Length: 455
Ligand SMILES: Cc1cc2nc3c(=O)[nH]c(=O)nc-3n(C[C@H](O)[C@H](O)[C@H](O)COP(=O)(O)OP(=O)(O)OC[C@H]3O[C@@H](n4cnc5c(N)ncnc54)[C@H](O)[C@@H]3O)c2cc1C
Image (cartoon, rainbow, N blue to C red; front, side, top):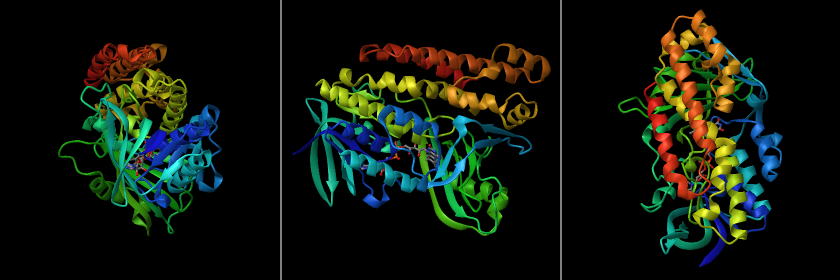
């Protein structure tokens, strides 16, 4: 039987970064993907990324600079547009600067980095199931060209994306949640077009359209990739009986935007899903780690997960190397990955997960009102999405708003959600130092989310 230090299932952004980090330290790592080698990186995506992620990753694990030849256009900021289209907020600054880029080429570049660092890549190979020895993960069974192959590994990393297909195979007594609730998943549809008859005047600004009726729990994005090219799509919560995202795309997006009524050359058209919640509460079990979408390492508000999956991959890789070097790949040996990820990104996700529940209960009228009255400023929104902190719901600022603006009920709810977000952050600041404290820690999360759902 083939044996490796680490087997990574899934060569997306999360898995490739994990393999890169581990291979760089000289350990043996095999990364497997069901896609053909030249299709690795192809994925339904908005194709947008903040450059700050790459600065962090360079510092953490030495990821090389984002290659210029995969950038379609440099992004200088994001416009958020109110449902009535009468008001927009422009968010600019270091955290909204980045790129719209070619996602497929990026995936190819990233897997090349892992390979160059020493990782072995098996493409066109399906990971079928986890293997166990004495009740603990010991490897994976894969299928290549119709033949099953068993591979042994000290650590198996599930980086299979939103399906988390290995996570779901963990035994009943695993502390890892195997299933992500439907209410915590976003479904999406997006097309990429050339627009020969339509010119995007300011492709350096991405646009996000907010509309609770069409895209509850999500939004429509118009991300130009140059003056005559665009990635346009929408994401929303899965609701029983609600139309599918592709149907809303056809009925709403096609009839709403001027460029959609001009000649379009379709370059791509497809749907996707992403988890939009806090990270899975423990990202490790004995000999097992979760990275990227399979660990729900996605921003719950905007659904961006490329940067955070890479951050997860870097922390997982660093921890896996330490665990193998100290000959302890048990849940205890791998545990440091949890606080590392939670501190660097998970805490913000957790707060934004609370905020997401609040947003789901806000009406279109209330959003229009908040934009019109200037209750929300661009800096506030940016702050919230970057830090998980609602500054406009607290202290002096709120008092000023309450005295100057009508809708007291909305303002009170904003204040309440701001306080719940602080509560959840406090819980995360006390993330348990070992698996023994996990159950008790989780008990503190539940009441906060339950309150947020009712706001
Ligand atoms: C519509 C949409 C738009 C998005 N837009 C953006 C955006 O603009 N910016 C952003 O930052 N994020 C965006 N995201 C989120 C982002 O794409 C993901 O969070 C990120 O790609 C997660 O990376 P990953 O490595 O975890 O998973 P993935 O990139 O999904 O990679 C998983 C890999 O595992 C492989 N795999 C799965 N099962 C098996 C198996 N059984 N055997 C072998 N291989 C397997 C797959 O082939 C795939 O290559 C978007 C998501 C969606 C759905």
